Length: 92
Image (cartoon, rainbow, N blue to C red; front, side, top):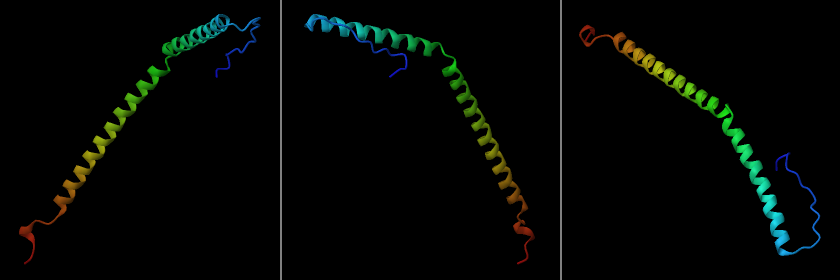
């Protein structure tokens, strides 16, 4: 529950069905209004936008690192192949 939720005692003289219905409708209406206000506040928050931007940055950086590692591995493979003696120069 939210720390802003108020549990107030409502004085009801009689416990008729209409009175209970009105009471709960009012409680639900107040809670709905609070929830909508909270949703509105969260939708205006910059946190979601910042989180999305940082996720994109991290994904881009991860792609850069992977590309660099792939290039480095290919270069290492080519160097090791070039370092091998050619079959023409081997002694039989």
